[in-house]
Length: 62
Image (cartoon, rainbow, N blue to C red; front, top):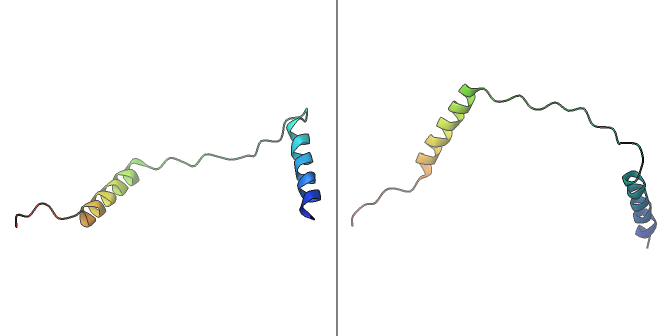
């Protein structure tokens, strides 16, 4: 019963901000720098070795 006034306030605020004439401020963020090529190659090699370590054994005749 106490949730109805709170939800009404949240919805009214969302509707007002949606139809506001001014644009909301854009947050300042910087893209993460790209991983260097050497690091990507090292990571790929590490993942390759890990994949071979956990791979099932090959075919063995009975």
